[in-house]
Image (tube, rainbow, N blue to C red):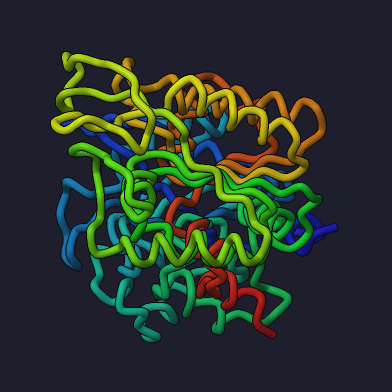
Length: 399
């Protein structure tokens, strides 16, 4: 049993770092509550034990000063609904007098939400004094914010030192994130296939580099694929290309071959005469795209080839889309990958989907519950798979 699950929170004040950095529209309405819903099991466990929950989070980038546009107050009503109608208390300052008075008067089973941590520049600076003040609010520290685990901020990487080892722990979401990432990175059943997409090679160099030591197959799609084609001497029209990464792309291909790792690039592409939903569309081999045209999705042959590789896999990591899936004409590739991953999962493979666009895709196409795990942390997951130590994980794990 995990440290969190075995902990009895009765009469204890638990300070829980959550990631409530949710998107809001111009009416301050939540447009995607995934991150809030993900925190509910951790909150409920503490409440069911008879504990008191103090939630802290950031929202947006207020640049170290109070800005009502980034207040967490608009989240109160929805958070209450997610907790079955429970009233949620609010402190308009995370370390002010109101926070301490309200926390001191809390009864078992109550929830308090603190105002945006980033209203203080000390949060992002990892300031010890700020972390110590936050720590004084509670008896136990619970980090359940995987999405911020790669940041060395006061509430994620510094605060843990002010709690004894037995009183600092990961919440259920964080435990699940770490467990799933570890399973893929260090306990993967072979064949292990990594699907890497997105616009830029520069964003994914480190993850591909690290996966050369782990994966059997690496599928590369999205705009970044055309840098690889150009590095091989192909014609890519006006497709996205990072000219200053051509040498790195060629080197990655060479090193993969030397290690026996199969790199799969899309054999054909859906191309357009402009980046627009009303563009004229055609198909072409990915290394023979006519001048004036650009690749915006993988083609039918590539979809079938990639699905075949995925279907033979026992472990699957997916980070990044295959094309501009936000536009209907260019979403066939990303949808095909989602279907293939879901089918492989049903057949017994372990699949982890992470990175904002990949997660958006599986949600949009209705496959989120058909894969093994959907990560809530884009940047954090990326850095984890790059082989980096995440400050938010190290702080809680350290003895």
